[in-house]
Amino acid sequence: MQTSFMTRLAGGEPLVWLDFYDYAGAKLAGAAGIPWLDEAAFAAFHGKAQGLLGSDVITVPVARIAEALLAANPALSSALAEKKRPAYPLRRLLEDAGLRQAVSALLGPLRAADGERPLALVLPSPRQWLAAAYAVAHGEPMAAEVANDP
Image (cartoon, rainbow, N blue to C red; front, side):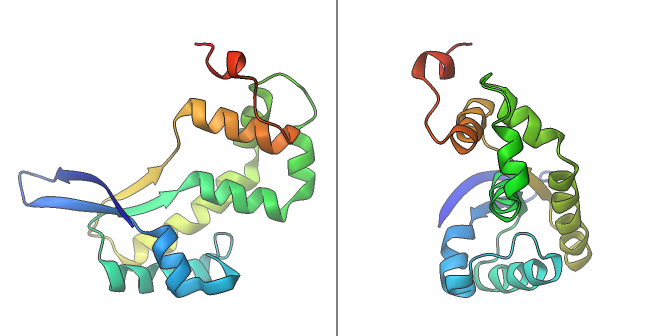
């Protein structure tokens, strides 16, 4: 478990933002893993994790949802590899309506369960996500000269 960020809202006490998914997933979800694509099961998991760890910020890690979506949807994984251009896999993933629907489906129950805490979508840096999408699409890491090109 890692403390990712501290901030203040309206001049109040500092907020602790915990990235608890690895820890809580191992302790609460077991071998089945975190149910990223099942909104009811995810809301139950998240409620247990919040009860155990009590982060002051509700986080939704979009890249992890995308990973689960790709694992569950081989056609989408294949579509990412249709073109060899470095940015194509990530662009194709972000264009997919299924990703937007999966993220949106989790936001409603989380907000309904806790309307007081800030809600944050967590995304990797563009360079990290570009490299990860490329690796998923093509089964190999992106060439360093392409990944480091500004």
